Length: 269
Image 1 (cartoon, rainbow, N blue to C red):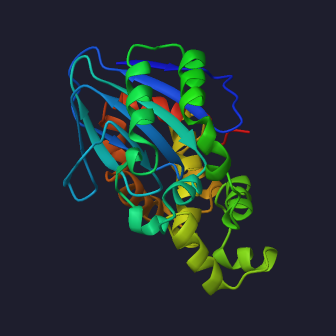
Image 2 (image 1 turned 180 degrees about the horizontal axis):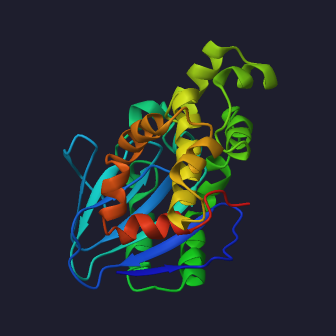
């Protein structure tokens, strides 16, 4: 499996761009939710199933928002192109409550003209340079960026949660921002695709699992305490919820797709 990305990537719209090429068949691999939206392009034979182990249809070019973990099985000579975006972009593109779009790969041709989608798809088929990939995406989709980039009320709150590494109670949001708990709940369902509590837990888990991957912590207990988990059982529950497996299963699982994702910066400036 070949991963192509640029650690120094900077763009006014995309947070990151990655190409993944499969040089041989790959067994199904778990993918965690990072709390972002992705525009993705599929080439070749790739299968996906959701957290209920139900097969999910994969359009050639699609957009996906915050949801649960899923599994991907890819075959030789297939590939992905992944464009990472802030989570509110899904709502800006679809104008549908993000919670209603959880765990769904939404065909981007519903929101972008068919000839643009077709041209984009074929123009990027053999391109492996991140610079060239981004330039071609800009050429095809630039006219949509302005509408898709409109800032929503949740954006500042999401950034606050990211800056706090998910280590805060939901109540703190009502103290810092001029919204009631009920308003925050409605806002997050609409714009983020998760409740404030679930998103906070998701952010904390993503920071924690990245620390776990580095093996720089003295002990698992030390790591759990650092991220304000009550105990190991509490941490195990988040593992099951966000990654669909136990800590032991994660450590014994050879999953280059997940490992590569965790190796990159979680929050891009």
